[in-house]
Image (cartoon, rainbow, N blue to C red; front, side, top):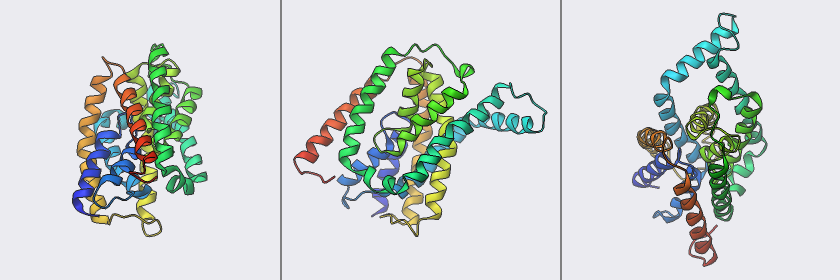
Length: 274
């Protein structure tokens, strides 16, 4: 694959990672329409997500440093466990457990079976509808101050569904948050913070295992795509946090359903292969 293709996929990763439309699904779909017409692979996807997750670290830098600092101080008794930042630190850890466990258990399926375009088409539509329902019926009264261990686990279970391309990491966790009554901004904020351990863990694991896991991209191409994803992702985070403070997720719901439907048509007519 060429550097141009890598740049295109880096743009796609950056544009779609934080929107509730599934970046892994888009990388898989776009790869079919590039000159090489190949699946970029789970390894390439996980590594380029390091770029977009680095954008999360930059955007929420002050929050992350404060949470880590207060959490560490709590371990030696300098800060109360009831401190909001300490609680957030523990809740991020708790919420990260489901995706770690399920990621290990279903590693082979994540790299192979789950990347079928039929599965992606179905998850785009199904979870798009669920997101729409959650955005419509959710009470949107709770903020991160109301976050509990029970809710953190539910968020974590929702995030783990993103192991299946088409679900969307942000889409799954935001949907769970809305269904539990959290407002859009709080659901998105916790979604982004919760993704940090999971994405960095997965990305670095794939990075160090590149020799064992086939990928159509070389190290140089993957690095370029990751850098592009970082720059674009930083801009998209700022856009989304501003957008959802005033508007609903319905445009993304409609987009997911249309994309999933178009994918089914293309697969059914044999224009692309699953």
